[in-house]
Length: 249
Image (cartoon, rainbow, N blue to C red; front, side, top):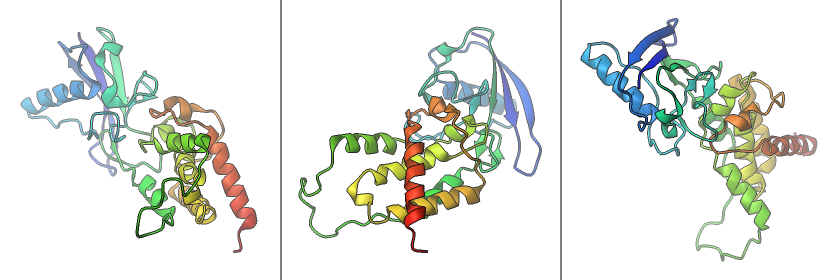
C-alpha cells in the first residue's frame, strides 16, 4: 500500500523543527510501524539524506523506548500498544500519517522524534531505596501479603516509563507514572519504612522537573500501553497527604 508520512524533523533542541513529507510505496501490512520507518530510513540513506531519528530498543513492547505521537495519539490508534507493536495493517492504502515527538517541557527534543526522558530517572532516584534484610533469604511466608495488595502492586509495577501518559495529558502531567512507582511500594510491607519520605521526595522532584498538574481527564490511562489505572493517582494523593500531615520536619 501507499502511505504519506508527515514527520517532525528537528536537528537539535537549539534549532526550530518542522514537518517534512515523505511518500512510501509497497508498504506491507505485515510490517510493524518501526519496520516501516526503517524502510523509510533506508531510502533516505540511499539518497544521501539524513535518516529520521527515533527511539527504539527491545521492539517487544517491554522497554517503553519507542515513544512518538501518531496522528495525535501516543503510540498510535491501538489501545494498550507500544509503537513497536503497532502494525501497518491498522492503516489503509493512501493514508496520511502525522508523526511527532512527545510534547512536554519536561521532555525536551534531542533530535527529530527523540526526546530526553531523563526526568523520569531523576524522579525514580528521588524515591531512594527500599529497606531489606541482608544475609539468608527470608522464609516465603515470613511476610503475609493479601493477594489483592500483591496483585495491585504487580499491576502498578508493570509501568514501563514510556511517557505516553505525559504526552496524552493536556497539562503534561506525570502523575500516572509517579503514582505507579509510589503504589508498587506503598502496597507492600517492604516499602513501608521509607513510604513517607519516598512519596514526598518523588512529588517534589516531579514538580521541580516542570510537569503539569493532574486535572482528572483520564487521558493518561487511555494512552498507557501497560493499562495503569488512574486509581493509583488517588492512592498517591492519599499517601502524599498522609506523609505531609505526619511529617516531623
